[in-house]
Length: 139
Image (tube, rainbow, N blue to C red; front, side):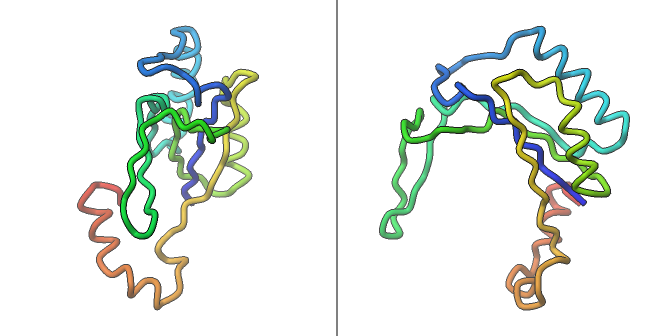
């Protein structure tokens, strides 16, 4: 089973472009990342720039509309993520509990929908999905 652990740092929604994390916090997080890697559960991970450096594309009336960040109406944003492969939701939760997060951070855990879980008609509609994953080195 794959799970995505999403880091949600409170206050990051208003961070200025170019805002970088504290070196001590990064050092602590690297120890956690190394533990995930050494346990063989880490698939991928990345940090994200603040929303003030991003954009959103909405589709009003079927037409794309671009809105540059920051996004005033947003209360929570992603600061980064880990993709892990573990045997259960409980194991994913245990890994999240080990994260050296601060008081202003939350980790949301979401199970990845595996292709095999979808009904036949959905699998047929997504013909080529597995080939696409292999082509980008995801399988």
